Length: 210
Image 1 (cartoon, rainbow, N blue to C red):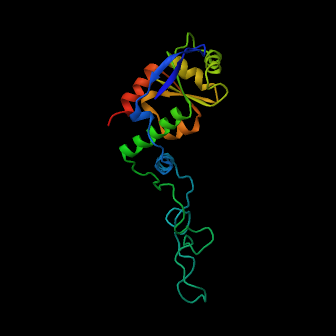
Image 2: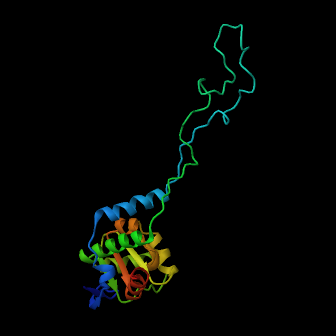
Image 3: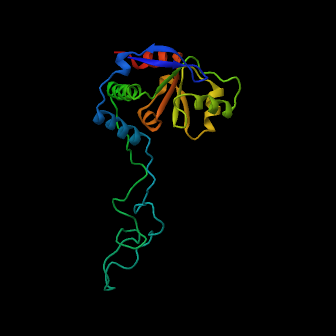
């Protein structure tokens, strides 16, 4: 499969051959869904937290005598039976939602999403992606000349570029990441993947290992 290569003025300047192992995979939604769910679980932080009887305040003294009062026996006001007492089997913030993900499975799902981008013409390859200065306006002008114009776009960088990363932070619809650290959720969240030829080579190197 070939895809067009653009310059920073939005003009087509040639084509590039895509690695079929990375960009021509049959997409299986269940595989991608499993990785999305696993990725979301691995970043989930439990917030709900209830106090058990050992954590609530008070209850050091027996409320009343064991016998002779005519009332039910109680040893502590921290009992779950009391209002304001501890909670039994309530949610705790030490719960671990994370799951282990098979690396080959994760790599397969990522290649499926990349293949879908290429098949739907949402993979935008540019000759080189460099900013002369750290200006959000300049980056926005470049993106508006490419096929990704007006849409959410992820920029995959072959090497860390502080100018592009800083400029992208001021754009709600743009995310700049390293080409070797892509993930399924971000690729699905952003409609287009904008990448330089050097970044494309990095992607095929990192994710094209059989």
